[in-house]
Image 1 (cartoon, rainbow, N blue to C red):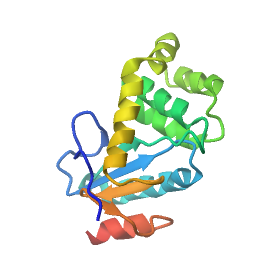
Image 2: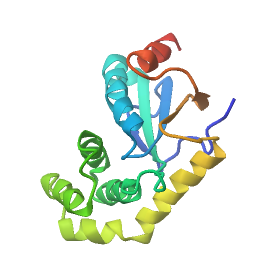
Image 3: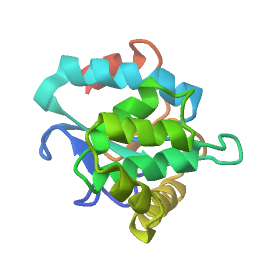
Image 4: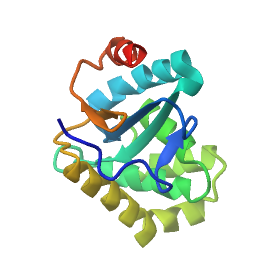
Amino acid sequence: MSHLQPEIGAGDHRQGPADAPLQLVEYGDYQCSYCGEAYPAIKAAQQALGDKLAFVFRNFPLPDVHPQAQGAALAAEAAAQQGKFWEMHNALYEHQNQLDDQHLEGFAQRLGLDVERFKRDMQSQAAADKVEADFESGIRSGVNGTPSFFVNGQKFDGNWQGQGLLEFLQQQ
């Protein structure tokens, strides 16, 4: 059984209470179609479980398979530097077939970001370092594909599709 390494910390993007009894971590790739399928399943779990669930997203772009995944991850981190990580995260998954730079800048504009700063931040060492740190933590945690989920620090290898993830979380 693989364990999450490192554990959830201050540098993570989290939705929900830090002390929630259920801690769900996803290693995801914004261009991965399976991650796109997991996105509404996670939203459903968040809605159903409310404050019982904290959700953390960590970047795990696979550029050999998904050439726009790295840029999308950098866009999410650039948006995070203006306090809009989750808004960009949602836009990326809701428009997975539009991850080129022109669309990323359009998302930034629609989210009310300073677009020039966003473009600089996408090129920043801080954004690159965060994506790399997430990816490296995935490798240490035994991630070998996306999406990969961890529930309360343990790798979840069950069926996450449809209601599978929610049903598993409700049984915990």
